[in-house]
Length: 394
Image (tube, rainbow, N blue to C red; front, side):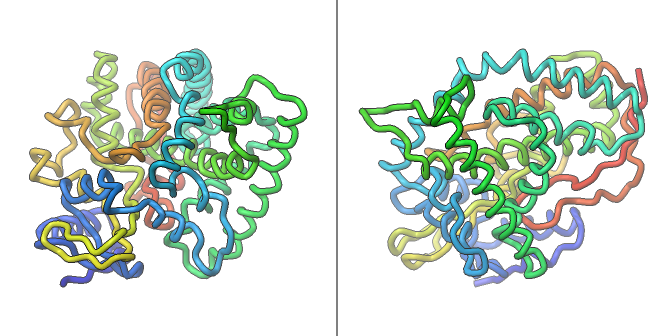
């Protein structure tokens, strides 16, 4: 069985060349440095995510609590639970992400996007991450949770450190340990305050939520907030940042979006497929199982390579080309599949669409101030760490 090193590629071209070799491998293969089995083809990754009877999400608890870190509330979140426990927890928190909840947020997201876009274009030369792509989802998730804006300055460091856990190197360990402690203290204070005086915010809604006579405990709310706070920022930040890079590299896409706003949802879906903000996810084989002709022993860690699956030539025609509006364009696996399909998918899509609707009419060009993108460290989340651009006003 072939073994691949995910740290071997040094740039985007090498990374996608490696994914192509993986997709050509019969059956599964092994991945270093994780020592896991891995799937790169679309159907195998979708099966891995969908089949909760054979592949448990408890793997995420294992990867969220490496020996050097210790207890991490994310390891007890609904992301790491299987049915029926997952079903119960998801029912308690899903209402905030339903159609009604998103409708209540629309005006806030649109107004925030307009304000930030106007300021960024007026400034013209900006770090797009700090000026726009991070600030928008940070401010929205902060408002959803009813948090004090004066505390928002710590959120970027927290979200980046939490995304590094599964692929952190020793020099990053202490910073991540500090982040977990800081988040526990901060969110613990928020939960206690909402217990004393509930408000019109998601934390209060979570504390009030009840399904079949059961409410969430403080520990369960803590676990969900540990998941939501970074996830509500990081994935959308990278989606919007990757969108800006692609608008710069494919100026015809900017021209088309300026001419026809209905092009933007198709553009967003292709960004999600082509430059997936989420690169992979883990599961654990519940028993001895077979996947794509490979025998996987019970208890084995199995990785689904989302970024590789999203460019599978068996599913997507000309997968290496950026083609908004392509056939099956919304069938990517960036938000997962099955019972763990991302709760925040609708919010991420809405934020990205409103962000581009605010930005695109105000500019006639995005110029990258360097041809070399400084990508985020780590392997799990993919997007620019910083993005110096020139926003040429329309």
